Image (cartoon, rainbow, N blue to C red; front, side, top):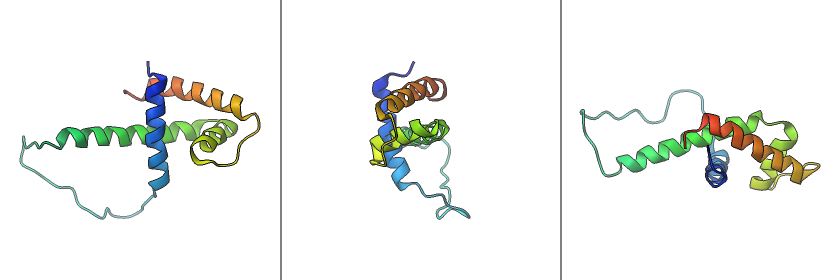
Length: 109
């Protein structure tokens, strides 16, 4: 089961992801690099971790978009200071409970 501390770390990653994510259409600005088989570098593990963090942030974005409106508004108020929904504390608690339940099933952290 995902711990609350890990959920909060993923939400922090989601906050950064959500601020900087821009949907792009068309061809990528860079092409995929190719290497000969078996090549590895000292940054390979760091690259793997950053890709996993990005994937977790994308999954969290999907989970947050699946929340009911009031709960989504409570999360966005907490992380982006957007307008506070009615019954904020209750909405936020329910959102965190839902996210913890759903993330446990969808994120291998």
